Image (cartoon, rainbow, N blue to C red; front, side, top):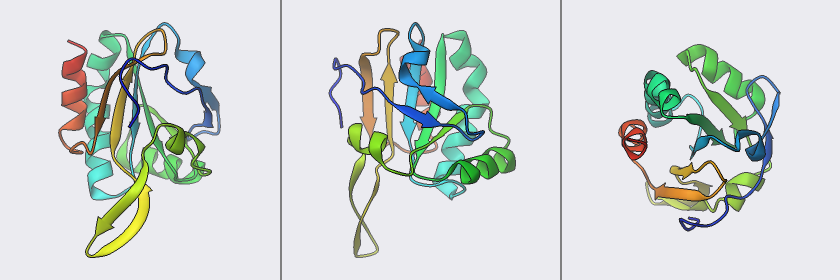
Length: 151
């Protein structure tokens, strides 16, 4: 996990519609950059739907929500449509941003060890500095916990 107070790594990734997004595009706004393992899984769906439900409050507090996973643009589009999501999902199939933000880790499940995305949320301030970082967050609680940081 990256340290609070450091400059957030720059990136350029496509969203669920194939439109490119750069971190620099959001200068002057707070950015909730959250990394999640996979589209359309139970935990990731709870987290994404929670962010969608609270999106108006994030907007009121000057924050934009960006979700990142290694899923494809097409997978993100299906996830957005199936769940009625209302924010940007970024596709990092090459794992460049996932690794730059230090969320690609060894994971253990059912006795099996594999590499994967550790559910992590970064709050980036208006100048592009990491203001808060939380790793191994609980999917259902993460949207509200993150919103509370903006109060």
